[in-house]
Image (cartoon, rainbow, N blue to C red):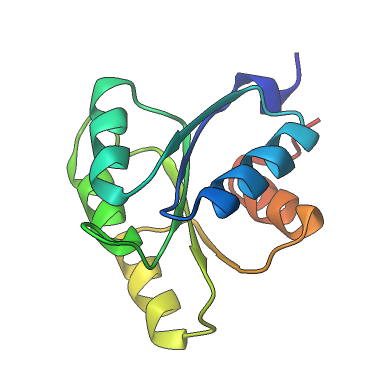
Amino acid sequence: MSLAEKIKVLIVDDQVTSRLLLGDALQQLGFKQITAAGDGEQGMKIMAQQPHHLVISDFNMPKMDGLGLLAAVRNNPATKKAAFIILTAQGDRALVTKAAALGANNVLAKPFTIEKMKAAIEAVFGALK
């Protein structure tokens, strides 16, 4: 069993298309345990009920944005060790700095390629194969 098959991934994005693209890319990389949430509040509920190893969250969402979700995940003892990758369409240095300060493991720019996603995940977990 590859490392990718063992990692539980939570995708959090308010755009259905983005969730589908992320899920498809993850499946192509060998991930099998993928859950999706439509916003940060739903993502936090899922993490509280069944912690995942990796959260890939959009930054800009209604209700609770990606940084709010990141802070909530880091403040919960049951989820604080989860890897967290923020997705953003903004090449915003301040956002990257703030995400890093809150404990994000990586930042991935949209639109992303499968290779860039793989590199972002491997920077956190090591080689997936």
